[in-house]
Image (tube, rainbow, N blue to C red; front, side):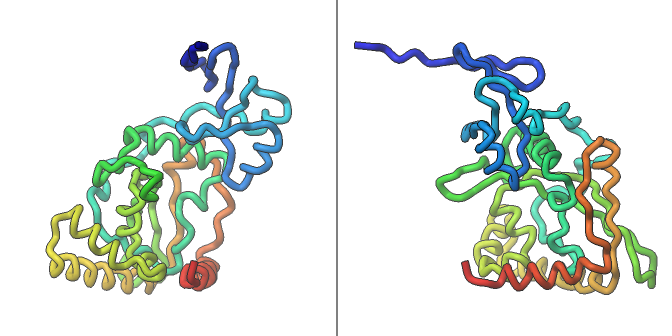
Length: 259
């Protein structure tokens, strides 16, 4: 009987692997370019959740060659800021303009890989791992500080930290979006489970978050993303503060649609 021999993978400097007699090279492919990369010969590794060149980096795949890794601590990042699980009320004018939308497609993959990797592929709040069978993923969330003087109509939304959250923790954090998508009950239950709050305590927390949200909505916010740019992370073109409310309105209507 023919025996199957397990093929071990050996990591190479520069992001490559030798698997058996073949050399594969990891790639950084923006989500919007998945189909183009596949057509160019890239392959997907479901375990590593990364695209790779199966026989070395070819000319046609060179556009997705990996860049040097991002440092695990971004310059100026405060990893103690905004710990635990709480409802984080983002002003309407800042909805759907998160770090992912502000980072270029190619660099987003580098950022995602760094944040989930330094968290050892666990949610930094509840320690859950990704589980495809239950639809739980690890996602990158931003912790912002909102700075504005008394009576000032414009404030600064400063990115202080990136944190790895599982899908349920991320859903509870964005409770307003969970409500729009009909997931408020599960988000509320998860908040209680993780924090140990009673239903009354969680309801009071929700009320407080709502008051904070209304107060923040009275201002327009400029984005401060210096912890990204100082680390050499390329930014996408971000909409001006005055146009973000229109984006929020459009995306809110989309979120309310069934399915």
